[in-house]
Picture 1 (cartoon, rainbow, N blue to C red):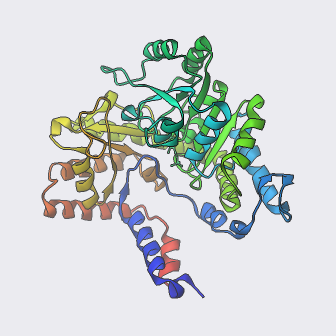
Picture 2 (spheres, rainbow, N blue to C red):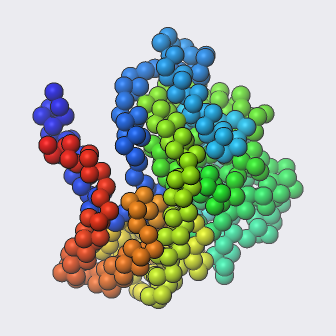
Picture 3 (cartoon, rainbow, N blue to C red):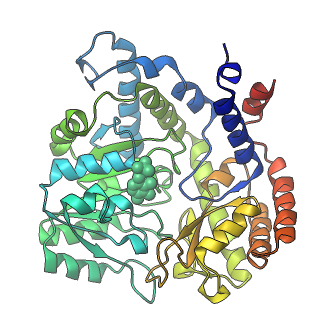
Amino acid sequence: MSLKSTDPKVFNAILKEAKRQNDNIELIASENFVTDEILDAQGSIMTNKYAEGYPGARWYGGCENVDIVESLAIERAKALFNAEHVNVQPHSGSQANMAVYFAALKPGDTVLAMDIACGGHLTHGHARNFSGTFFNIISYGVNKDSEMLDYDEILDLAKKHNPKMIIAGACAYPRIIDFKKFREICDKVGAMLLADIAHIAGLTIAGLHPNACKHAHFVTSTTHKTLRGPRSGIVMCKRQFAKSIDAMVFPGIQGGPLMHVIAAKAVAFKNAGTKEFREYQKHIVNNSKALADALMGKGYRLVSGGTDNHLMLIDLTEKELSGRDAASALDKAGITVNKNLIPYDEKTPAITSGIRLGTPAITTRGMKEKEMELIAELIDQALNNVNKAKVLSRVKKDVKRLTSKFPLYKDVIKRMTR
Ligand SMILES: *Cc1c(COP(=O)(O)O)cnc(C)c1O
């Protein structure tokens, strides 16, 4: 029996989602489109297998095949990042961060992390996240003028608060992060360094961003953003923390690992070692710069005046538009973004003064600088006509014309509509 006949409601939602991904311009900086090989591995029968423990030391029988994929994933990730130890079992980026917090700290310990309003992640100390509940979080922001990290200010905060751990990493920071400087600050105050490279893992592998594994005691990442693997996480660390990280991931905070996802991670890591992948990452950054330049050319103010990586933040204050209204208008035009706080935002997190744009997904489709200029033009038309349904639907037609030239999941859609 097929899903189509047994559960048409779910089947049709999946089909419509495939069409949505194909039709729209996806600019959410944390999203990407996986390959058919990733779908094959992640949709495989490895989902059936319980494998609590680690390769060669499991609690269940019959683990010889899942041991192969987990060992491959570990070895490949170690080579990609030049990491001393890798745990590939975290179910997500948040779980990876939780493993490090609980392995390295005690509840109540002080952590210095990036302010969420300036680009930090929920797990970097949001009051309603485990990180903000169990630990004493002190936040650093960005310099008010440059809107970039201010290492002198971070050092001052570190000296004042004596954190046990400092977190470097962000989900909405368009510039290079200097992990070496972060480590120097840590050494001055006797803190451990956690680098969260969830967004920039792919750029790191391609040599387009400094590699945190050189400097940090712990490095966490997702595998589904620029890395373009399955939705998941990993923890990397220096050798001396290997045992405590492994024990914290299992049995500390997780039960059985998702072996189908670990198989897909192994596939993603193999792909990330290729020349094509490094070229892809270069195109992401080139496209990001081209999109940023085109938007600035149309008078948009970008936070920090541009981008060094795969994402940018538009400050819409001068356009007298909120991030929420901008994102909603763009959605109607088939352009998918997220509203985002900008540094020192005067609006609330539900409204915001900005939107975040990223190029990993559209670059996967094969779009280049020429298309970035067109996308900037379409964004501009939509944002100048947020209340004009007619204009937005005309822009949506242009969006569809563009995306149809860069087909996505053609075979998936064909198979489903047969
Ligand atoms: C996306 C992200 C995470 C968390 O990833 P999930 O898989 O969604 O839990 C953690 N840290 C940073 C900096 C991120 O951007």
